[in-house]
Length: 205
Image (cartoon, rainbow, N blue to C red; front, top):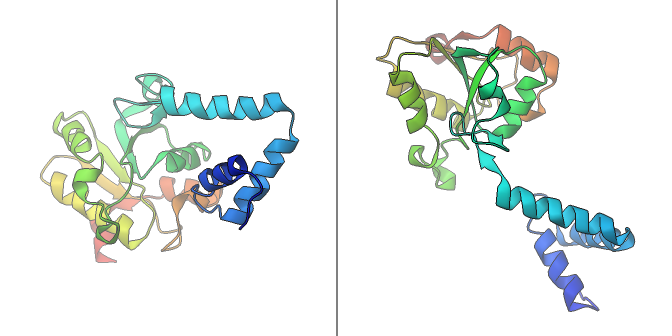
């Protein structure tokens, strides 16, 4: 792809590093920004700069937050004895949209995937185990995407905490195997949370 401007080329190269964005799409997006009023482009760049420099991760659940504690963890009406274990922020948003869950979350920040070089030490698993050790948690809900990597992650956590007095359940398989949680419709996802099953039962299926 030939460029008449080095500045344009640099912008396209940077934009094309985003997931799912090829060079042609990146060029279209950059040209679109050039056609917009200047202040809109600067608002976008300012928002991106601030989110990178000022964003926090909740010190309790690792959710993305503007403060040390996210709004969910700060909410006194949430059930602190019920923890939903998810892969990332997108899954928190998906479950929250169902209005079916009133507990707290624990965001792992990914899933175990040896093919991608991601092991248990790369995830927020140790802090989850520490929460369980306090004895304050009554139930853990595994709400990972029903993929091989998600199931592997669930089983690894199960093995770490199986000796503690805690109920472990997993979302019902109304979510099709192999699907990512964030793309599941709200009704199906909500029912999967409400109709969760004991994790030990899921190991036998």
